[in-house]
Length: 252
Figure 1 (spheres, helix red, strand yellow):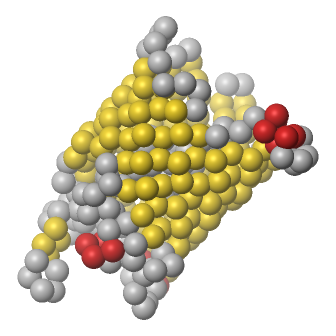
Figure 2 (cartoon, rainbow, N blue to C red):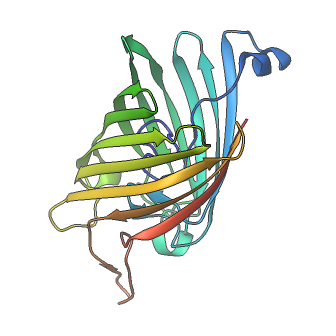
């Protein structure tokens, strides 16, 4: 799932990937030079979306493919394994998205698009939903920051209501090292929370170590507001308890 177009540290923290293909890769594959194709894969100790546990505390396997044009337009897909029994959305999430990203002012880049969350193995009923997103990013030396918003309009899969998400990400590269420090704060207003009033903050902080230009490992602490959920059979589960999340990710 998405908050800042599959940044490794946005909603799920190490759960997505940035566009990272090179023109040489596109040329070798017989693709026009103004089109790049990139892929990503990750193994995470938990799948966290905006602080919410979607893998039942278990390891999740994730990956995606992006196609981008030199004009800034892109399309992509990304998927993750889910906990079928606890989460109730089936065992797979598949995201389809498209948009535009690029420089919009001196030192400021923008990203805008639309994303479709699909759950192909979900039980009968409405689970899929659409969300629109946008963000602004700026880099100053070793520091990069992003502010963004994601809005899902009223849909049956959201209980006939909508959902608004606002967030900010901050990253700092430690000079002369392969280590970067990252933080995230988000605010949800709407259906996708585990609070009585539909308002919730989530946050995370962690570090990432770049083994090389393609491989990285990371660790973070992720938490969100909310309470334990009780199911109809009397059992319960806390989807928003704080957790340490580790990752091993590769881009190609």
